[in-house]
Amino acid sequence: RLTVQCAEGVGADAGRVEDSLAMWVRTIVLSLVLGAVHASAHGLHRRLLRQDDHHHASDEFGGGFEQRWGRSLLGSSDDADKLLKGSDTHIAFYVIIPFVSAVVGYVTNVVALQMTFYPLEFTPSQLKFAQLEGQPFGLLGGWQGIIPAKAGKMAAILCDLMTTKLLDVKEMFGKIVPVEFAEALAPEMNPSMSRIIANVMAEEAPTFWNSMPPKVQAGLVKEAMAGAEDFLADVIEDLQNHVYDVLDLKAMVVRLALENKQDVVRMFQEVGESEFRIIEHSGFYFGFAFGIVQMITFYCVDTLAPSFSGPLLPVFGFMVGYATNWFALKLIFRPIHPTRVCCCTVQGAFLKRQNQVSEKFSELNVELFCNAKNLWEEMMFGRLREEFGELVRRNTRRFTDVTIGKGAGAVKMVFGADAYARMREKIARNLVNELPRCVPVSYEYQDRALEVEATVCKAMKGLPPDEFEGVLHPVFEEDEIKLIVVGGCLGALVGFAQYILLFSGGI
Image 1: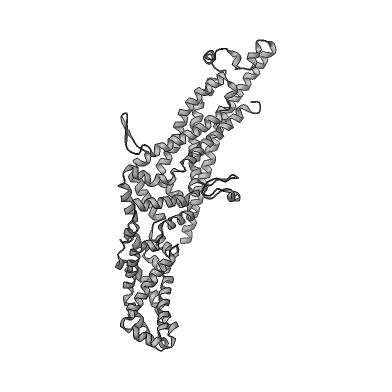
Image 2: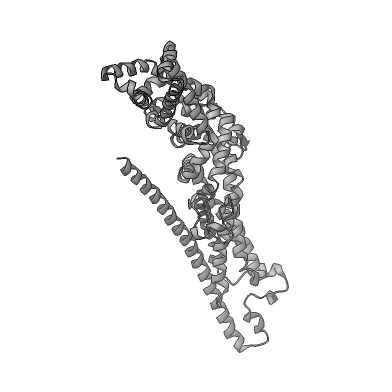
């Protein structure tokens, strides 16, 4: 079942990537097609004008100089007269400019967002050696989504902000009740401890151990296990008092982010789903508004200096892509506090959804990062695994001494002090090795007891707007300019395509 679920999960991730790539292709093609239609129609109109001017020029040479060049600057000595007279280009080609600009604004915003998230790994992989460290691009070309490229750094910033404003790790572990933890772990741990004690006795004192009947052996093990739950309770109490010595939360979050970039992308996409839709849709409206400015400017230049009208297309394309992304991002985070403007109150879209964002973020934070499974795996296998192992071993030695109690002197006399010390260390070492197999049975209890989701959610909802904005915005604030510039470059690319169709090849 686990294999099937993993396969389904991988398939779902692959499906999402394929859908995203398909959307890229559709949006880019749509923009280029519309631009090409507009450019081709405009270019055809120019060709017909030139052909008509050529026929007129063949009949009259002197006065035909002006007609031969269509809309030459020599057509009038007064710029105002030229503007009043208007361009030879049909008015429909100017009217369509704001609509093309709106589509370009929408497409550049959509594609820029997709380039923020995808691809998860640097593409093409053959050029990864030239990728700048921590950057989405390479010196020889190629691209990796901004968030996947910065996953580790973003995770570190997020962890610092979370532990300083939302969560106290020691207080979190303090919610575990030692006795309840011991009861949750006992079904797996007690049989393992019994087996370890029996095996160590057989290895260190085989003659003594094998000479006893099985019932006697079982009775001794059972007596030794009488304090097992106290031992487990002591381990968790020691952990609560020294959690910062055995758990590196930042290292855990960074490692998980680097190993599971799709989870980081998913967190951003789901937490900011509403805001990303605003960015996409606002591109259309802002693009249309800028298109009106472009239409007026293009008309003036096309009338007064037609040779300069072509290069305006990539310039305005960059301006539209850049400006629409910039304005869209400002809509998300500004103003921070509710601000009265005329007859309405405005506030950044992200900040207005503080409660919903808090709930979604805290839910995904537990699901993907701060859960009992990840916390224990970090302690058992992470950077501070030796310190954690020593914590368990010292409690095991104490358990062994307490179990033997007053009989310790007699035991040392029978087995020898060295043999007793070896048994003590073997039991401790074997328990540390057995812990990864046994502790998962307690994860369900720990997730309930830790209350990470409820704690983070409540803390986030209670933050004032400026502090709430400071929890998530700084994670990707420094990379906003990349998103904006990507939008500008995509807009310039579309404008350049229009320029080629209009002014190359004799069109």
